[in-house]
Length: 172
Ligand SMILES: CC(C)(COP(=O)(O)OP(=O)(O)OC[C@H]1O[C@@H](n2cnc3c(N)ncnc32)[C@H](O)[C@@H]1OP(=O)(O)O)[C@@H](O)C(=O)NCCC(=O)NCCS
Image (tube, rainbow, N blue to C red; front, side, top):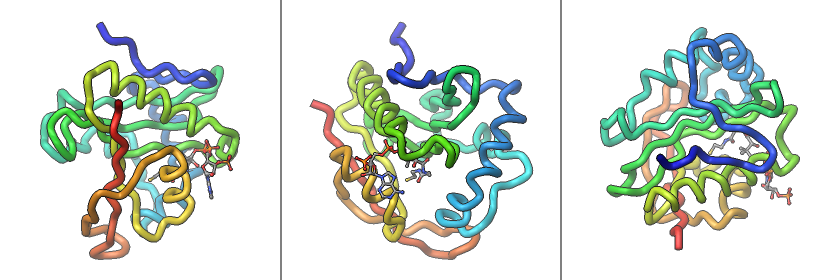
């Protein structure tokens, strides 16, 4: 069995029902992120949305949903899948850290562990969709070596049609 991603400073654990209350608090603390990227605040049951969210290619078995712990505190979520945008690619649908835990290198450490996990699963590339005008996220992903390969227009609840960069990093 391939071991789950193992960042140096946090722990990734498969999402379980018992995580619902702290996960909901996390999403509410990330209200600004939801406003910025969807135009609407987080819903009343984000765990249901995360579980219901099907990968773009529709194969739920390829989905990997982890909560992120720092010691005993749930500080984030990573929603990923294999098979998007191309077969075999590893796609990060969402990586979200509590505002109190940002800017300390934890996010880069987690992405490096996701890169390693994708590589161990023979993925040729790792990717993420970043809202074209979301500067902080653009800086973060570009800093890790991700580069835009194409643009996609998505219909967002609060914004209508919105431009996203599909950013990919080849895994040598
Ligand atoms: C994006 C996110 C996962 C990054 O994790 P993080 O732990 O805050 O990032 P790091 O501390 O590892 O930062 C690494 C680099 O990214 C850049 N960066 C991170 N946040 C930034 C910000 N708000 N503005 C500008 N640059 C930023 C910096 O270049 C930083 O390097 P430095 O520490 O040498 O300055 C986290 O900030 C987060 O959850 N943000 C809200 C959700 C989000 O935007 N998710 C991505 C959706 S596309």
